[in-house]
Length: 132
Image 1: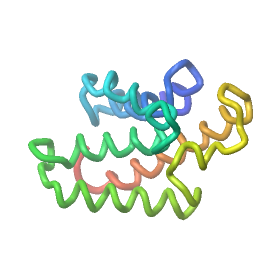
Image 2: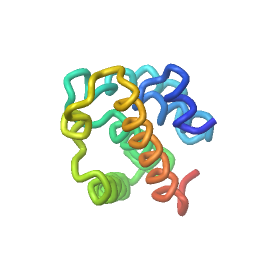
Image 3: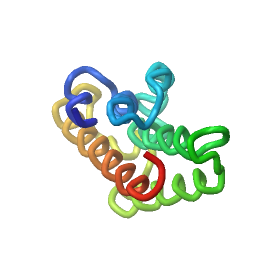
Image 4: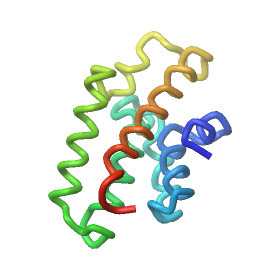
């Protein structure tokens, strides 16, 4: 399944990215409970949960003592992810991205589905060369 399918079947934005990455063999299933607290902008509307999930995947792949073990790669890829996300969405803050949309509304669900899809594609592009 892809991240959108998880998002449309009960997983939060951040959890959906992690669940997809688990299925792809990119991250440990131990990361799924960690992703829960990043949903909905960490519960207060800060960083978009999909962006947070994508960043967790990058850190898991490229951070200290991990597969690639090079924090400079992790930081460079994290920065690139944010830059690419901002090119399309102009913000990374959940409150800004969902301004005027009620929590649980079909409009917000559709909008957040797009964020999840975007983040999955960004991660796929960022890791297409290197670790998998």
